[in-house]
Image (cartoon, rainbow over all chains, first blue to last red; front, side, top):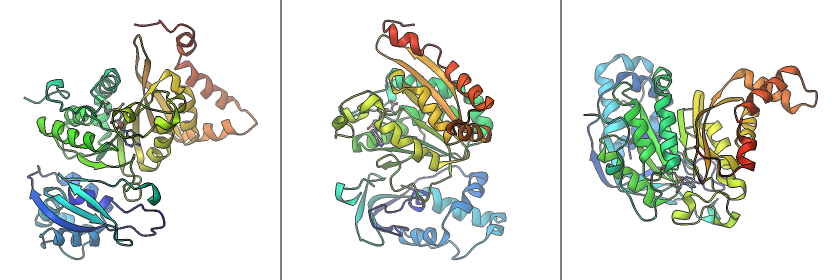
Length: 122
Length: 258
Ligand SMILES: C[S@@+](CC[C@H](N)C(=O)[O-])C[C@H]1O[C@@H](n2cnc3c(N)ncnc32)[C@H](O)[C@@H]1O
């Protein structure tokens, strides 16, 4: 699971008002190289919740992202490289995503998060 | 050498995961037929709901492939074996999609709203008793409840929420799902529709329908639900129904095959 996916997931349990961002519990993180594409990064940048993204990156061991940015950062190749790496190349392979309100764990196994809810949570 | 679509020999499998079948091939044929439009569409995010073996999302990634780099693919399935098999199929073809084991788009609906440029769905569409829908195991790949519409009718509003302003949805339907009624419902949500592929075999007649947001459709849709029927509304009705010319013949002549 890429950090991009983490940035798109929230806890949907009945009664939870703000299930975002999910806290990451790290079991295993892997790096997979992905071709660099600046257009994709520019398209995605405005959709990313930056603070959640920076925190997620730190949790998986990458602390190179600036705490605060605006779209002028997209001019910088150095920034784009870091953004690319954190967004697409770092995968949570094993671990869990934890609902910030209830503490419910959504397991991540072989890189795939299980967001299915039990009947009493829907 | 890059493949044009997923190769059956490289598609992974599991006893409880739907194997690529006529419906899967029809959907991939629709994507191939629409390939140039898809390339011009410049999608950023593509998504499949109900990925099964991964045949379709893998094919989509290959079809758009090198000519459209930097597209992000996401696929979901309720069946945990299916998402695992899909990851093997993707890997065997050297492409990537992010996988989520979930019910339609549960967990993604909030943050992914309005971001999906292309959605593809080959849903469970076979008419079955309602209590067979969503059971564990392979039956949930086809069990569609009354008129095969249970899961389809849950997917449509979610698709509407997730699709971007320029978003397209490709969906497989069986004739007994009443596709013209699905198109009318989507028209009320502001979507135009078109049949991209039409197939009939001994057992089933299926359509792959493409939906896209269309301001005129929304206007027409509104007019259609108001009692005072206006000319454009009727025009829309007729053109929609004329897309399904074989509807009545298929109903009366079930041996019709081509
Ligand atoms: C007809 S199969 C299609 C599989 C594959 N996409 C193909 O075309 O070969 C339908 C798939 O949808 C999945 N499915 C059924 N209900 C679902 C739901 N509520 N959310 C997500 N996936 C679902 C099934 O597990 C199955 O893999």
